[in-house]
Length: 109
Length: 117
Image (cartoon, rainbow over all chains, first blue to last red; front, side):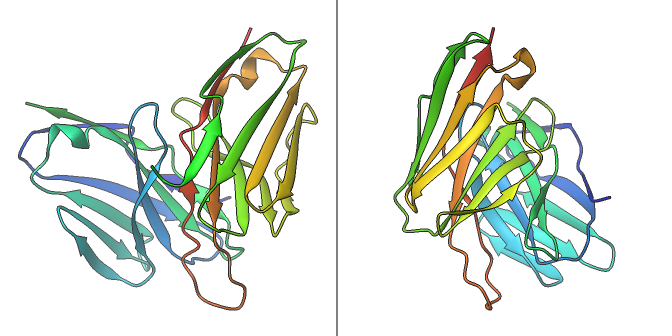
């Protein structure tokens, strides 16, 4: 079966750096997405990786290793507003999105 | 504001009621989706419409009935729901272009928080 694994919850301190990992086993691969979802709000698109390596976008970076079935989202200079759930999703060979359960990130002052 | 709106934002209904959820996208996309989001579970894809045609129905019970009158509007009609159907129902849209390697990024609405009593 297809599976996406990510930690349920993480805690970090304001101003610090946090890395949220995602591992996947899917039928084929057509890219990996990261979304941010604040409580009671819509998931919003953060990043897309289809080739190996690091994609940097401001304070957020996303890394992919297709051979290892692994990705991470790196958040730098954490702010209180970064408290949210972070969803990892993989597009399989049928162009269907397979979703992880999300990682709830708690930022403490 | 993602360009996808959903109404109502909150809905409480009894098991014998009939209600409808509405989604509208202002992004000019050609595909729309209904998802169910339950606490601590992955998003569950319910229905997909490409070019107004339903292309996906992931074994969803018949008490959920989708309708897509045009590429900008999507409805989810609800009847005789069960308490376990209580969840956040999310609508999303994307631009799907066949034959090209596109990201098919989905844009979500804020969801309808449904409680079935």
